[in-house]
Length: 334
Image (cartoon, rainbow, N blue to C red):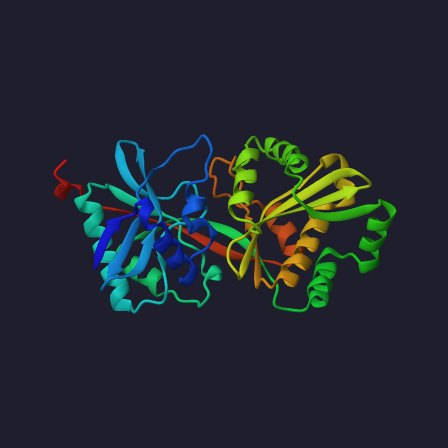
């Protein structure tokens, strides 16, 4: 097993492996990891090679925290961890062994990473997770996130939503007609962004992405970023920005509303329209995002109201995990 640090001349090979891997997605492509404006990371991504062929990737950066040097899931992406195809268990252990040897020889105190959730896998396989736990990697954080299964018919999905929300189909039709509501898939990011900023400010936080970053990403990944705007007449009352993570999964990354028009239920209507879009586009699931309270003393505290909102829209609770392992510092000769 040969392990070495990623360099720019390896981008084509890296991206090709992500495309053909079992769990690789948008967040693992090199352009996504380097798009950030005004934010720089000390990239330390790794490539694992055996007999001249890539067998795994590890997108990461160096993070200094509390006097320790951490090989950290790339801070510019939602998911990091190991990207792989379907390796045999023996090969998984070989990858982990070489990874630890590399970390220790390069004087990393620990590693911290957020793997791609199992629901993103082309073929569900938990071999890697088992091997990590067996080798002493600790799951130190759990996040609840929701997915909407798109495999049923659109009519059956909608019927279940109407049942859960205790609303009829005619109720939503009337709401749309009486308020002259229309939906547009467009590129009006300048209309959407002020709504996003105002929504985030209500929770004392800022958007993950700047307006310039969203525009840059849209140009770098044509067709991957789909903006749905909802209007009442000519007034924008909300918007949803969906990311295409893979050919199986799309992410409802931002679902925002103009609170002056909250009575028009834009948050629900936008998700229902996104379900229609996702079904038509051929995705298997929509990732509806995490439902924690980041402003709480414990940021892992579940947001009951947000979880309930997602459940009403057919969201099913799943788990995102965060792994950590501390390495023996005695052998690092610091």
